[in-house]
Amino acid sequence: MQNFLFEYHEWIEALHVIAVISWMAGMLYLPRLFVYHCEAKKGSEFSEKLKIMEKRLLRYIMNPAMIAVWLLGLMLVYGDPGVMKNGWMHAKLTLVVLMTGTHGFFAATRKKFEKDENTRTQKFYRIVNEVPTVLMILIVIMVIVKPF
Image 1 (spheres, rainbow, N blue to C red):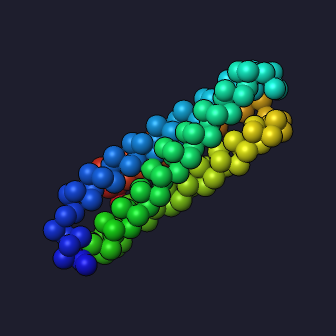
Image 2: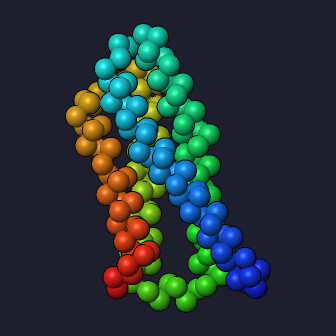
Image 3: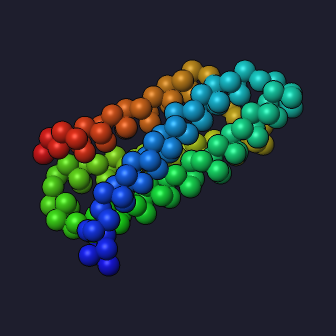
């Protein structure tokens, strides 16, 4: 198995990056939908449309992309276990776990909007919208710069 992973490392890495881009697109867009959803009157046509958009974004883009990121990333580590000796990789994995936790928070928030039970403000979601951006910047720095 490790021979296969070593031989196809570049392909696995390319698919991993594609999955990361897809996941990040959703992670940046979903909280923006939450900002708009705060403005929508409960039960309105706009609110119901946002519910559909949020559900589809999470179910058909974000969840599959996150799963692909993890599976492909773990394949890369299994194919080159020596990478785990690097401090930057430990930091990157910690940040990816935080990104996954943020994803889970967004999924739970979507369910609250679906039930018309959101109690948070637009300002809250505008701030939360920056969390995936900050995590992404730090992850890219870990992978490209490898500061430690």
